Image (cartoon, rainbow, N blue to C red; front, top):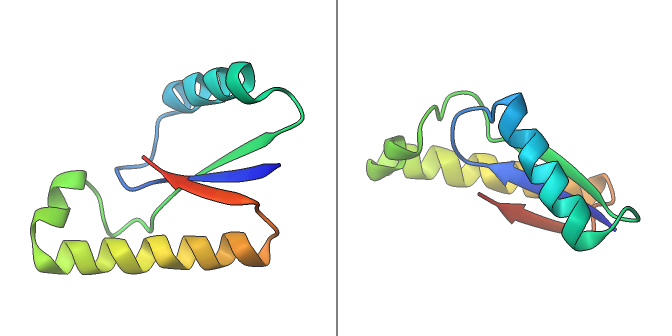
Length: 80
């Protein structure tokens, strides 16, 4: 199973990505693949979604990532 995790915060640091990968591997096993991506760079912080423009931009970017995942054959998409 190929799963996409979309981060709606600032780009996820490598150390945090490794934690997600380790936990995912323990829970889901080695036959599954977790890919981590962020929304587009313009939405920098989760607090930016307090404003309408930030929410709109973030939602659009998340939907774009979901469509890309579908085209690339991902089985599931989750968000942080």
